[in-house]
Image (cartoon, rainbow, N blue to C red; front, top):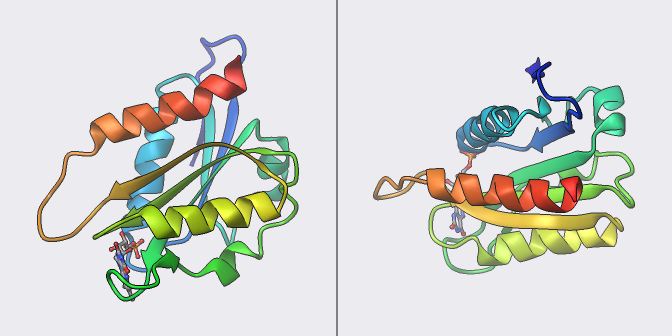
Length: 156
Ligand SMILES: Cc1cc2nc3c(=O)[nH]c(=O)nc-3n(C[C@H](O)[C@H](O)[C@H](O)COP(=O)(O)O)c2cc1C
């Protein structure tokens, strides 16, 4: 999905790269894309293993997301980091990070932050989103906050 809003003078280019096992993180990545787009950004949403290298290279912000893997409480970590490692150089790029989870995003989000910092990227925002589990949660407020936190450092 690549879209832009021609009414906005200075369009930000945002690449959203996700790793998803069962589709929840993919769905969230697409929802984030729609939300960034409604703020006037030009957005590309790709699986992290199959992205448009030119689009990512030119992006003002790279949003990277994966799911929380672990034993539901013990030793949680970012899911399928090996796939994220196929991503090319993101040194000195502004990145916004997200994880999806069912119980707690803390450890996986910290792991993803460490992963991004080891690659010398500039983490501008990070958030966990509960996209499934025993009860349904309305995450629109959290999406709005993530979009705002991601765009503020890039546009100012
Ligand atoms: C093997 C496996 C282990 C998981 N371990 C955890 C965990 O330790 N903590 C947690 O909060 N969620 C855990 N989850 C839940 C997923 O992180 C959550 O459902 C996520 O949204 C799945 O994303 P996906 O649909 O893109 O694969 C686990 C899911 C799977 C399949």
